[in-house]
Image (cartoon, rainbow, N blue to C red; front, top):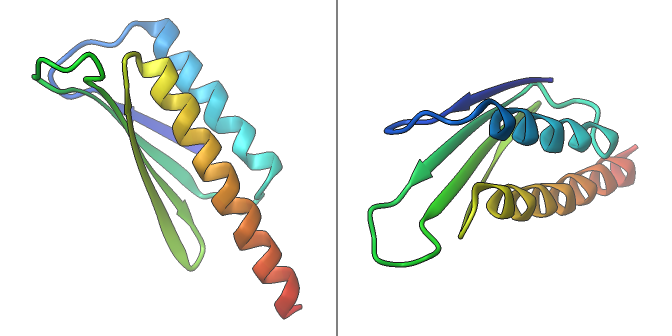
Length: 100
């Protein structure tokens, strides 16, 4: 799976990019047909502490899955996104098995 991380309006540290890529790579153990992941890391200009936004567009055959989470840190938001995607991919796999 190819992971494309975009960080509009700020320069992300290499460690953050590696962290995001490693987390998303784990999704392949739940669903092996992932084509690519587009990741957007954004900082919202707000007084809220939870101003880090992680959006992931997961491209899979048939449908794309989009998940967006915000948190105090990008790592926290990435963890949330990956958990959500994991659940959705497991559901999708079960549905496919039901049709086979």
